[in-house]
Image 1 (tube, rainbow, N blue to C red):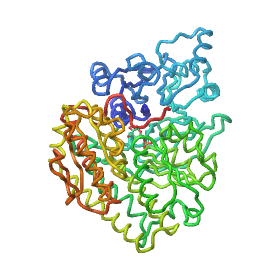
Image 2: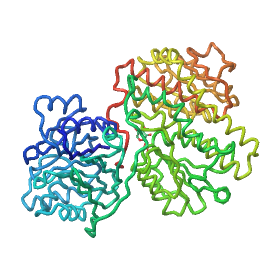
Image 3: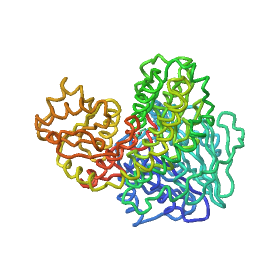
Image 4: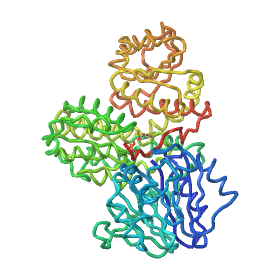
Length: 607
Ligand code: G6P
């Protein structure tokens, strides 16, 4: 939800800010803007639309010159995407870029209006800008601290004060913000990938801290006491190639191709001497044996990975696993207690709903284990235990490799729990771990089968609506397949438990409603095949995703995608490949903006 950058150094910063902003466009792309000190004045350029369509065109006509500035790419919350609602928002004395939501902006606005302030935009941010201006009397830290005491909500702000043209101020409450440490230049950014071109060293700004940044110095203050704070520098282990397309047409395609190596990086360090090893997070067998039940909470694809976790863990370990959508979990007063393990899954580690779910689980006294991709993110730091998925940066809004590694983690958890509680033997556990290690090579082979996925995609592009059906683990995968397709192709689709179709949804079926049936589980194959026949006989075109050698009734399917026949339990890690690539090629054929689908953002830091 919105990306922030800032630069202070010796270089011309307009084009530098734009380059960094492009790396943050996954956070939102409704509009973009920059503000730069030019001869002691704050010059702002901003425009509706993606950077290349709006801001860049304006900058080509007239570009501010200066070496200190801030930038923003927006996912609109308050006020429609428009030039006027774009950030930076300022009044000549103060200029602000904001990620998050100021909840009490109306109240602040009304009170400032009584003091003679006028408001131009419909944004919540403008309330913070004018409040800063109101409190400012020569000391930025004082003004920022006073503003923070009044403002409620979540925010990360980059701030310029006209009186201090050699520095940027930054402040954070909940929303993420890092301060990049260069040589003779320093940065702020919502995420370290934005500045990897320049430096790998950064500080994590904590809640309630203010940073004052000049080209040669970074000073941190505690907002409530005003005292300076010493912080430890972090070093990013992602390199810049990881955040570039590397010859692929889209980040999504690149990230699908990175799945084999991402899976290896997730799985290998967690298998020692042939058995699952969770010593890095401190989860012991004794703790596991005391758990009454397990909760898995996340949003979007992360929650879908949790569904795989539920099926696999319950099957192997015979312990109840509840999967929850984070936004539902936090408001339904869940029956979570001490002696429960709550697994929080998140690529970004910043999703607001997921973070709130984690807080609730922590408060309930449960043990919390975060499975997160972004190192040092809020969720990673707030959970009692953390393990990283090591997938490298995921830039495409549509999650692929992050989902794959989250699923892989679900297997590691299931094996670990099952072995600890004694429902599988050491030999069985070793065998499962060995097979899991073989998955990346199989995934690599499946990715190569692009012609068949393109062919299936070409048969879907005229559909208005689609159904994905499956049973058991295949149903969990259908959910993810359906999400991928609708997210990037804009073709409506739903996933349905195949056996449930006849209780209403089958009435939708006719020749205009293609059905993608996922049937990789041998035990359930005949059952799903019966459902396939039911939809086929009602006119649906059927795409069947099954294992090689499955006893398919050819008359009931139109197109078949066959996958290598590995153990049923592990099939999701392979089945996901055709589902991702069918969605990808469908979106490409329809000319969609694959990496930045409309209305979406990758990191959803608002409720
Ligand atoms: C957004 C993204 C999804 C992602 C979800 C959860 O909606 O578009 O791809 O699955 O957030 O994100 P997280 O970072 O918590 O995994």
